[in-house]
Length: 491
Ligand code: LFR
Image (cartoon, rainbow, N blue to C red; front, side, top):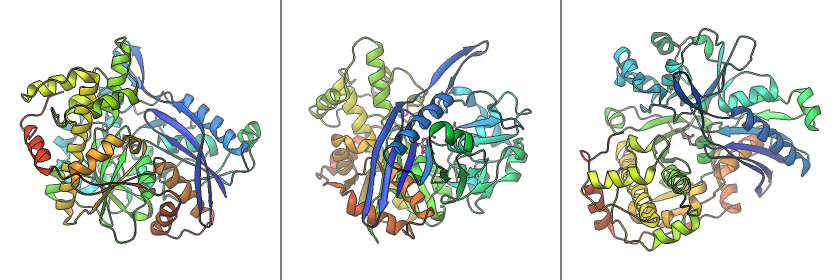
């Protein structure tokens, strides 16, 4: 069967045409488009938005393109998490969704923790305090009175396609308004904090039918009656479905793109004090799994560096900067890549130099040296996170699966194996689209009873590439010591 997977990332969106059958699994990109923050000025300063209507329009172009190549049986949408649109009672969009990197939530978490202590909030939601969690964003809204419903980005696009309002559970689990154990909205928590529960739409699981494309829209686009299927609508949930882990392997995963999501797949959440202190999060996955992970700042720091060099009139291409980085001395300077300073858009090379200087290390100068510092620092963060995840859960990790766009970065894959001290299996690049397509296929009757069956099909059709660790454990341990807590840069 042929399916369209809409996969929206923070820096680009794509529509993939997928084919699933016995022993068959392919995805082909039929439409790709840029995405990113759009800063808009107003009397109070400025706000960083998303261009959600542009994304909707490009998504429709992509679905049409997918259908031109063969009749579609379904469509599924996944995107980055936490962000949302507010609808009024009639279903009209109230304002343009705000980008999670906008600083509007500054100080909100502290306010919330004055009412609900961090320990209790973690116990209910399982989530780490990231400044952009939906809860904090809703509390930063100027006015919620006119709002009738809050729809996360994929749910909003599903609504525009089908006219049906709902919330898919994997993405709902990232809002900090969702009870990780009961798998329902945390209504009491919302009320205590002043978030009206009328905003929270009915929940459904990945694999549920959302509806069919509205007849007028289908006619306009030349589409047949087309089911819209709920997939793991959080892109990381779909990407982890797409991890080609074999049965019984002790694996950690890194979903590597704008962010690096580093962790383990579990059957139930880990809500210990140690997990809370280590800033781990428990997000809902497909088939009731839990993604016990940590957000590591990711390739965003490198892409923002490229943007900075371009803005400064000295553009460098990604391939050339990576080639330069490969010949820089390993671990010359490393930073705590998770420092809050690296979250907002801006001049990353300066921030990296500053962080190196703050920790008494030589400052990288050339683009190649900066890029090497970013990659070494990412690998170091992966090392710390994989080891923490193992110790917080009492599990061992024998292999790290890397999926997503970062798989293309061979240097980073090798550094990851070196830093973690276990083999890396890299690929597929398009794990999120594959996970999206497989959950749709199952919902539409293609067999594939469970995650194991889906992953077996991925393994036979998308063999990952293996990187062996090179055994320089002492060097990585020494680099880790250079940025031990106490040397963190401040935003
Ligand atoms: C990755 C991702 C992460 C989430 C971040 C913000 O694209 O979805 O999982 O923490 O974006 O939504």
